[in-house]
Image 1 (cartoon, rainbow, N blue to C red):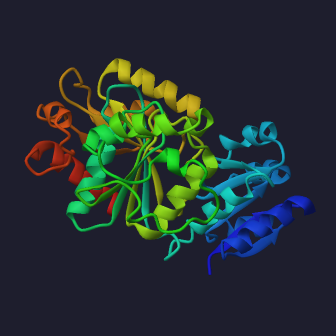
Image 2 (cartoon, rainbow, N blue to C red):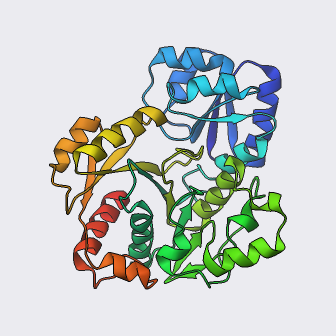
Length: 352
């Protein structure tokens, strides 16, 4: 049974936390002092820190790890600790179902077996959505169960990237009310070449929904819905790729096998923009994927060094991609050999 380390003293807050832990089928271990928190920090499936204990955890200087959440009653207090502790934040008791969904997806076993990869663009024009889809499609070609999820509502519309505008299935307008522990979504989502897709919708499908839904139904999904949906996919898939766009969403680092990749261009303007993005988001646990090609000739290792993050891989331009995407041809196909080889190397590193 997965263990949730609870570092808290507030009895009301502990009661809310324990309700979420029980609903997720985890075993809680409640500690109130520094030494037991330090001993169990690495081994727990998830760490839940009451906001009143956040200063103590910061003073311990513990190594960063996934699935760390600071919880409390006021978002203003919680926001102060997200960057220092490299943690997500949830308001309790109002977001207890989101906490349950997170815990359900971070056990590392049957409850959360997927590798979850979050792609963040260091600047615009780097093909982050295309890369997200390519990773999922290459994984599916290797007979892995893969999904790609569009988090940024102002992103590139995954339906268009993979030619799924007319594919039936649920998109975010149908999933925006998801909460807590939701069931298996396979068979209910648009699927192209074996990849399940969660998008905001576009083209004919979006137009049809706008004709029949009330205006407030068109609001984008919040952190609770995103957490519930990704946690469900993490239980049933082997790879879940999150197209996080600019990274300005609250779904990050919640799953045991999660990884954040910052995509940065190999040119001066892109590096400057990526550095600003890192500072804005407080990203300290990301690796860098460098986009090279026309007008992007900086050394990838130099780009990573200038950002202060490890180099994870390099993806070059492919002149055949724009036309293929215009025709609704999903990225990652073998006939685009150079681009696909780069994506395959990334996938090998993710799977290692």
